[in-house]
View 1: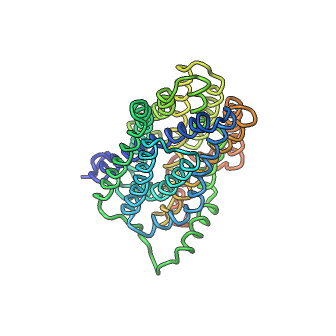
View 2 (view 1 turned 30 degrees about the vertical axis):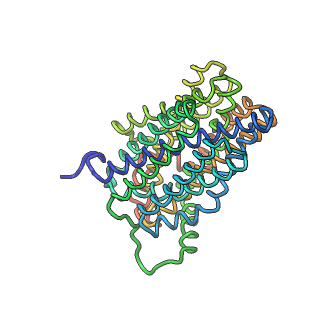
View 3 (view 1 turned 120 degrees about the vertical axis):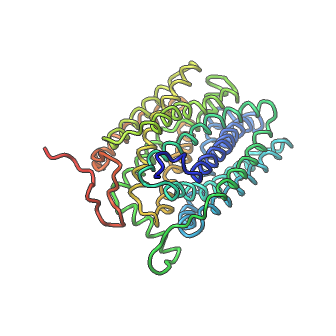
Length: 430
């Protein structure tokens, strides 16, 4: 009997829990590293708000550099080796970073160079984890259940994003090193859960291809398929401009004055909104006019970001962050489903790596952009300008890539590398 839900598949249930534990631990780490960078810059280095905010931008750059350098290698690793072992390797490296942060925090030995170095190590671990983990789900569920599997996976991500920063903030207030020790344990547990899934390797036909050639093929495939290129680059530029997370420590410490506990709630608010939408999508995933829904969701994301920048009420700010997260969840759900279903399995690792690079570039370079803007015009203006920019980018992409507007369903446009699918979604004839 064919399963009607991904949760009926044992391997998917282990995958779901592993993803939740990994997100819980890594998001807790990321939020606290940002808070400690800003706090150390202000308290130990005597920096003003704008200079300390610029340090948050540099933190984003420190995480992005290893992502940029290692993404091609990570994509090849996900397509060439057992994807479970790649995830376990990445989680082990990240657990070592968490332990280093725990002991340095416990010994009161934190400095900005050390925090930047450990953030870079975290970025290097994440670049191998993302493509391999993203490419596992399509191998353990049938294609008909993939949109539901992606929605459920997003619930794991969003619930972990809600609980992780909030729990990390509370633990940090009790003992600053405790959340890092917990993150290390959860990362190892996540890796071991993935290791219990049956071996997963991409299927390849024909003679073995040199890794360098595989890297080139992955980039050529994405740049050749305008539909995929539009999906990936929309997220890249919209979040690069509209991301507000880098400035949350500034809002928590100096603007809203709610401290690390408030920062944990603020960091978790977008995920709370996203989790509610993900639950709805797992129950009733929409299947019509998916491209238009993705574009409108990014517009709402930008508008909520702009409103958050102007808010000076903590509860209103939390509500706006929740709206921002809900809109982003719709965009992520549509984009991820379209990318996964329109990519051949033997290229999923590399395409996931390129998509992950775009996401990381939007996040980490977005942090650098926000930090530089904040150093010149202040945190409020930096976030407000970014939100308006995300709206403008969406309008521009709807014009440059009409394929996005014309995507009516999730039906694959290509079953193989260059063969058009007979059910390709097209604009209805007038």
